[in-house]
Amino acid sequence: MKSFNNEGLFAFVLFICVTIICIVIVSLIGFLFLDESTTKERSNVHIVDADFDQTHYQYKIKR
Image (cartoon, rainbow, N blue to C red; front, side, top):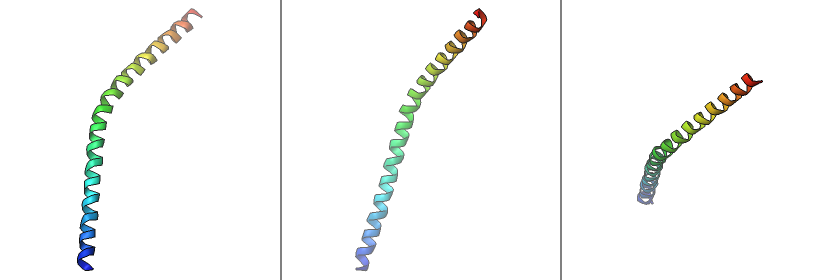
């Protein structure tokens, strides 16, 4: 009974370690890919914001 508990505990700890390693790997890969796309999206958003501010400013000047 005691050896079974030790094996179960070892398997449980091993399972947790493997799960954590998988989560870390997926997070790193996702972060690398997502970071690239979010930088592009952010630059686009900044451009849109700049255009909007410029047109708003020109509209204020015309008015």
